[in-house]
Length: 178
Image (cartoon, rainbow, N blue to C red):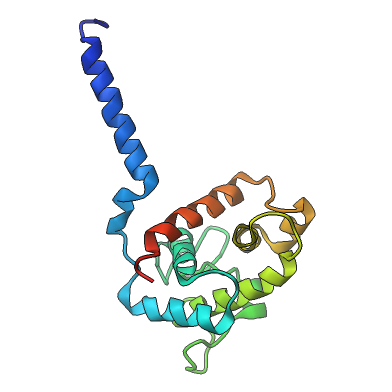
């Protein structure tokens, strides 16, 4: 007994917490998160058109990690839209993905193809560095290609390492949806 509570009860409670933590970590509870149905073909077409190296599931996972699929998201740093483009990056690479005459980072039909296009550029910029190609592209999207090249791989930035890991985890969740 520990403080009046049988050790067996404490052990059972700890095993329950451990099982729940493992379940959440493995993505079992994430199955309730779905890629918005109207965006599934957009992710697929973007990957087909620009082939930046990411799969449609990885691109969708990136959108979830960036904005939780919120096309109106704006970060404290000023990043905008579902794919969280900074204004300077958008000015450089923004595409009119839906051909309505306006390239808008707040429009998922523009932002998703732009992200795939931008990642095809990032893939070339980090080519030749050691490590997993997809992780390098994701790190470059998050921290910038200069930071990745300067580090000779994924930079030792906690936010970037967490970002890469989260996108990989969510991509597994979305693989069967895309």
